Amino acid sequence: MTLRPAALLLPLLLACSSEGSAPLPDVSADAGTPPGKDAGSILGVDAGSDAADAAKPFECLPAAAKGSFYELSSPDLGATRTVSMCEYRGKVALVVNVASQCGYTPQYAPLEVLYQKYIDQGFVVLGFPCNQFGGQEPGTDTDISTFCTKEYGITFPMFTKSNVNAPTENPIYTWLKAQPGGAGDITWNFNKFLLSRDGTLLKRYDSAVAPDAPALIADVEAALK
Image (cartoon, rainbow, N blue to C red; front, side, top):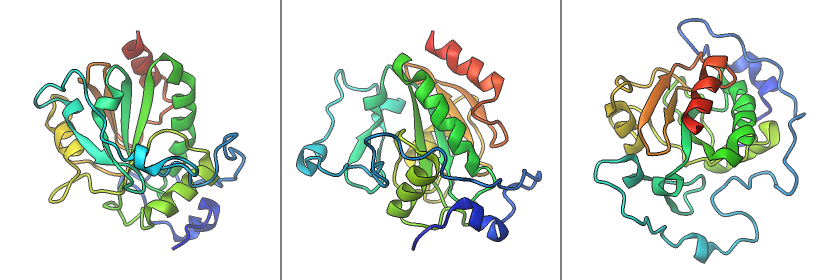
């Protein structure tokens, strides 16, 4: 299956929120593909990389505390390897369930801007594609990767498509929703969870809170200090 550009999908999109989110605007390829990054290369193993080396398990030292975020893992986009969340220990992380055919899909653009702005300070965005809400992520991991890189120039880490609510939810989301301030099912695509450098959940944001909202940016900057 090949995902078409978002602008062509507009007439076919389902309503993205019972609260009446704004319709998906025209999306051009202006963001382009970052220099040196081929479309589809946010799949787990980039072209030309050593797949055997990439498949080696990450050794979390010191060992992650029992019951912590860093004890968890999830397959990367393309399911080439299982990624330990311990790889992001010491970073401020924004965990987002994403979709390619949603009224909130244009949030990919400010998510990438946020990632690029603060990456050198120890910030990371972790994207988890999900098809549980209106069937708005119907494609394969390869489709998702191609769409994200061609339409939005995404470079932040992405993971294989998975569910974020029961009965078959990704264990990372089981953990997130069990934390103080994180309770309750994921309500729609682009819910967001901000984690501190030590893996503590700081805040949960609704889909309507854009990645470039002043309050969210202020929270990220405070967490990075």
